[in-house]
Structure formats: C-alpha cells, structure tokens
Image (cartoon, rainbow, N blue to C red; front, side, top):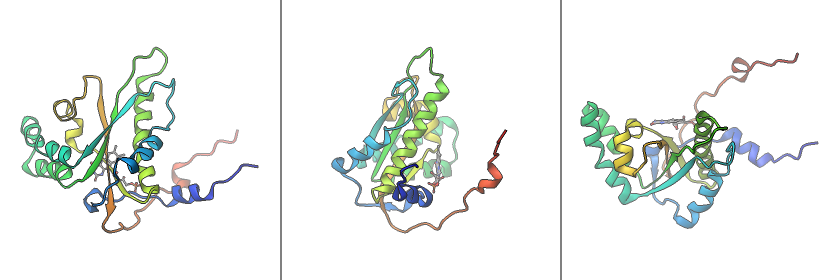
Length: 192
Ligand SMILES: Cc1cc2nc3c(=O)[nH]c(=O)nc-3n(C[C@H](O)[C@H](O)[C@H](O)COP(=O)(O)O)c2cc1C
C-alpha cells in the first residue's frame, strides 16, 4: 500500500495564489527565503542540466526595475495604461524572485523540456511560499517578454528568458476561490 501524506495532499487540493497587489510587509528575509528557494529548485530536470537560475529582487531593485519600464514601453509602442500597470507591478512590490530560464546545450534534452523544468521551478516556489504561510503570485507582464528589458534590468544573456516573477509577501485579504477545472471534462481514461 502507498504511504499517504494527507497534509501535503490537502495543501495541493486547496492551494491558491494571492494577487500581488494584495501583498505587503513583512516579506521573508534571506534566512526564511533560502529554504523556499531550495524547495523551488527541487524539481524534475531531465539530464540534470539545471536550466534555470534565480534572481532575488529586493525593494530597491524593484523600484529600479519600475524606472526602466517607460523606456521599454515607448520602444514597443505600449499605451500609457499598459506602461503604468507594468510600472506599478514593480513599484508596489517589496520582494519578488525572478525565475530565469537558462537553457543548457544538450544533444539529448530538447529545449522545450528545459522550458517545462523552468515552469516547474516557478510553481514550486509559489507552492513553497504558500506552504510557508506567505502570500505569493506568479506574474509575467509584457516587460518580462522584452529582450531589451531583460538585458537592461536583469543582465540576462541572449539565450536566457524570464520564466516568471514570483511575488512573495504578507497577504492583506484572502481572495475568493475561483472556479477550478472539471476533471471529467478534461480527462480521458484509456483502459485498453
Ligand atoms: C506564466 C504565467 C504568467 C502569469 N502572469 C500573470 C500576470 O502577469 N498578471 C496576472 O494577473 N496573472 C498572471 N498569471 C496568473 C496568476 O499567477 C494567477 O494568480 C493564477 O493563475 C492563479 O492560480 P492559482 O490560484 O491556482 O495559484 C500568470 C500565470 C502564469 C502561469
């Protein structure tokens, strides 16, 4: 018989993100954050390539990133509303971890599998933060897909991408539950 871990299963069946705009102080300090980063990188990784890395963005760094959004937005022809929303995402945050997809050359492991592994890091960090009692939210936003912003703001190399910004903090208000997928609709059982 399998050995159940009901607490872990209960967590997975009830977990939900907390909108970044509802997150405030306090945020985890480096001692509290380290085990969450360790949990985040304990993910499936075909070929043990470690095709990801982490950048911890503290308050001053987030303010600096907010200040780089306008230039990227003007270059990309973004509306004032889109620029203001992206600025606010950084300017209002107190802590975020950028998960960087950093693919490694491999004859055996396709690039898409390295992308999937980076997404696993994002979800694991989100879940680790939630399990530790923090509020957390996986955000992207248009700047995260702009190579110029990624290079200027975070020093990414040509082959790297931002997989996500994981905002972590103390939740101000618990969000309502949202509709979840109907398993019978999305699942096909093949028995022969
Ligand atoms: C790759 C990725 C990028 C996302 N970017 C954003 C974003 O920029 N803004 C936003 O409001 N939600 C974004 N979301 C959705 C939030 O993470 C949302 O809170 C989440 O879907 C809630 O799911 P949960 O409650 O099951 O954790 C993104 C989700 C993913 C997977």
